[in-house]
Length: 246
Image (cartoon, rainbow, N blue to C red; front, side, top):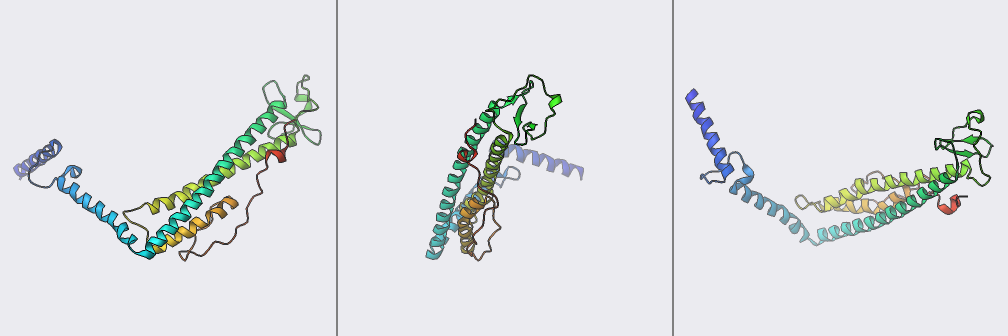
């Protein structure tokens, strides 16, 4: 049957060449389905059917109302989160500038390492390590008005907290709000009424997530309101609380 295999192989080659050239051979494409007019027409009908699924659901007044409530909750959640992200970005920038100013005003070793005097009188580097006096150059002097190690550590920790909060806010965006928006925009497989209620309830949790600085556990599909959540960390110190750099 070798002759038959050769003939079939040649037929495959001819069909592929015809499909690549766009020639109509009177039968369905065997290889390049995305170029097959029949396949393309079937996909169009499927896409229209999926689109019509949401339109059909929206004809139901209760479903349409649930859909609108979910969208409103999503918009409100995004507004609150966007405001928090902006405020955090501005605070992070201010704290970074304050830390830079404190570092610039500190005494420095010849290699650029900042040196601070702590409340106990010891000299410390930026990591809080004690510096041996006999290992320091004799030319090193700590001005009376130089920032203390405690001032530096407070500014450093405040900046770290602000950056960590920014990461958590971004996580709320990517793990909570964005998936909800993607689901609401899914016209091929629109959410049912129960899922819409769950999305609405989840979006109403976002303000509590922002306050807590973390993503809260998933709600049950019952859509019960979320209980108040106490923040897990103290508020990020402001520049006024840190105080101006000496």
